[in-house]
Structure formats: C-alpha cells, structure tokens
Image 1: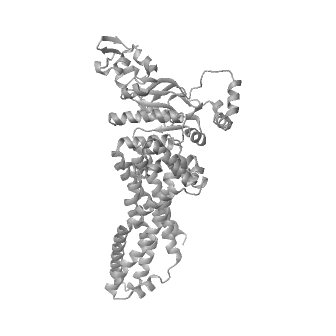
Image 2 (image 1 turned 180 degrees about the vertical axis):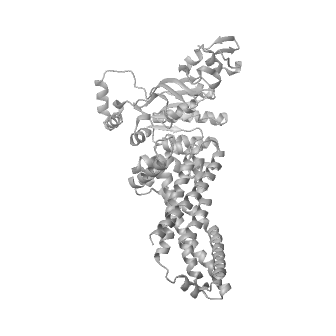
Image 3 (image 1 turned 30 degrees about the vertical axis):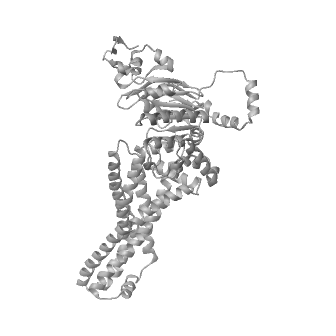
Length: 312
Length: 250
C-alpha cells in the first residue's frame, strides 16, 4: 500500500480554509475558475485478500461527492463489512487506496487520523452505544474528546446534547442506559452520536437491520433529514432494497459470495436509474428477487428466469 | 495503537503511559467510571475477602500452634503469622480473589465491548480508548488491590487471634504485642508493593485478553478463562521472583 506524501499538508490547509472569513472564501471562489467538484471520498482499486487465499474485495473503485446519499449494496458475503472497515480505517487493504477529504486514511498518524475522524461520523450496525453510559453521556462522548472547551462548560454541553437528542426524539430517554431502549431507539441514539460533531461524512452500516418497517422508514427519514440539515454526505452500507429505493442518490452493487468469480467486484455503479436500467443478470437478479433471483454455475454462466446467460 | 490492529502488551503500555501523561486530569465521565469500577471490584469484594482471610488466618494459626507447640515455641505464632500474612499470604490471597472476581469480569466486559463493536466505535470517533476506558480501570485496580491486601492482613490476624484466644486463652493485648514484636514498616510495605505490582500485571492481562477477543459470544467466556489462568500464573511467577529478590537483598 502506497502512502502519498503530497497529501500530508492537506489537513492543515483544510483547517486554514475553515478559519478564513466567508467573504474571503467567496472572493477566492470567484477568482478560481470553476472546476469539477472534488469528491469527499475516493476509493481506488481496493483489494482485500486473507492469508488463506480467499479474496473478498477485487478492485473496488468509486467516488462519493458532496451531497450524495451513496449506497453500497450487496448480498451476503460480498465484502460490505470489510469495505466499511477499510473505509473507516480499522482494517488495512491488501492493495488500493481510500482518500477521505483528500487524506489517505491508512497513511495518517495518530493525531492526523483523530483530526480527520472529527469530520466522519460512523453509525454501526449494532449501534455500538457504550453500555456503561447513559444515552446523553454517549452523545456527549465526542464532545468530551474533541471539544474539551464545550465539555468543561456543563450547561453548554447539556444543552448541545439535548439539542442532538431532540433531533432524534430521544430527550425523554436521555438518562436511560442503552439496555433500556428498543432497537429503533438505540439506532436513533447512535445516529445522534454519529452526527454530534456535524461531520462532513456519515458512514452508516446496515442502519435498518433488525428493525420493523415503521422503524426502518423512520431511521431512513432521520438519516436523510439530519444529514441534509448538518450538510453531511451519507454513505449507507445495506442489503435493504427498500431503503436503497427510498434514500439513495447514487451507489454501487457488489457481487456476493454466491455470485462466484465476480464476488467483491462492482457489478454496477451510478444512480438509482442506472441500477434499474442495468442489463447485468446479477444486478437484475438482486433488484428483482421476486423473479427467483439468479443462480451462478461453475462455468460463470447464470441461470435466470429468462434462460441461461453469461456473466459480463 | 492503530485502530483495528492487535493490542500487544507493548502497545498497551505505551498507550496507557501516553494517555496518563498527555492530559493528567480526568474528566467527570472518567471519575464516574473509576468510582463505579472501584466499588464493584473493591467494596463488593469485602464479604468474600473477609471469609477467605478469616478462615486462612484461623487455619494457619491452628497449624502453627500445633507444630510450634512440639518445639515449645508457640509464643512465636503471632509474629510468624504477621510476617507470613504481610509478605506472602495476604498479597497472594487478595490477588487470587481479585483475579477470580475482577480480572475475569473486566476481560469479559472488554471482550463483549469488542464483539459489540463498541471499541471500534470509540476508535473511529478518535476517542483514545487507553485514556477513556483502560486508565480508569487500571487506577481502580492499582488502588483497590493494595487496599484489599491491607484488609486481608487485618482479617487474617483477627482469625488467627480467634484461634489463639480459644487455644491459649490469652487476650488481644498479648496477641498484638507478640505479633508486633520486632515488626517493621518494611513488612507492610512489601505486601502493599507486591499488590501494586500484581494489580498492574493482572490489569494488563485483562486488557490484552479482552481487547484481542475475536468471534461471537462464545469468545467472552473463553477470554475470561484465559485471563484468569494467565493472571494466576503471572502473579505466582512475579511473587516467586519478588520473594527471591527480597531474600537475596536481606
């Protein structure tokens, strides 16, 4: 894995840019010729293999732009969780790079990573709320670590936490422990914590798994509403088609374990319309499971309702 | 420690030292964690320690009384018990109770947090787990184990006095005077010092085993067992080395 040293100063540059007065920023924008928008997340040729020779990701590449609700779709064993772990920097890729806000996440030192992670909120599948802390304390945790000046002012911290909890309608449960909450409430509390620092990027791992349809819709709506309010770009890792149709602006579909040789590769990338317009039998099989899906044979051919076709 | 990487003993030690030295003050949340932990590992262990220390005190007093009476040296029983309890028995007894109750519990708790992605969540938030999670635990271990050791000495002496009073018919004054005859502060400091070292050793084992847990819920039980076995072996070895060094320096 190569670390690009030219990006070392970009965090400092970004901080300088944030400190500039808005008027100056406007002037800078006027003076600069209009460019293609810089993606917030750039993933290039990601490969992840394990010592036993199995490979879960095979050359995954995609870009996520500001304002996107980007969905990473895929069936079981397609490497969604591995991809998420690589995106948030807790797992190293075998090859390829991940740049978040211009930084190669896997080449950052402790302090730089901490700085960068202020800009990234992560909502885990299980919620991952700390069981020993109340809901309010869980939401206060990012402030305590990243904004000691807020956490020293008790009133300000309490008010900020209440504001975050109000947004997810959990004020009445602020003093409860996670074990006293329902699955949907836990997800909402985790969402409040993930968005506590108003991150530029929210990465959400199967946010609706294990929830009933009403709670699923509620979490989807909250994710969209809150990220729009805070200006966050959202990446959702899911296998839930309904959620995909409800929230995604763009996305990718990864080949699943059952898809044979195309496991861990990008089958389709683009907008929702691109997904539904795709002629790829595995994409059609995933998007229309009611037609019996797709069975991949050893010779890489697919048996669909429309007969036998070869995987492109 | 690199997020998601292996938590080696070296990485944990460096990270804990850095966490303690970078910002020595503890925020309110860490104080709360520290007091809760101290309460569960120290105060709630009092009945167990009382029972074990009292019984051990009684038993060694009976055995020593019986054996030393044959040599006509039974008056030396209180002094022997004082030395044995302070330098050997109390640090080991307190450590064993501590390992059974707290090391297993802490390792299982950390393993559970690892499996439930709580550790991953903290790391991706940029929260230093050494400072926010491990340091309050280590402080609680470091304070409560020596306190339990002192308590064990006291209760052990009480048990021994019970036997002494029943067999010899002598009063507490005589027992205390004979126990403290030639006693030195060094005796107490050796026990307390050993307990502090044991606390650091067993805490590191609990952290290492718990944070490196992999798999499902079955890993929690496996980790707790591994932590207890490793901690017992480590404490026994450290005690043997410490006693050897102590006797060599006398």
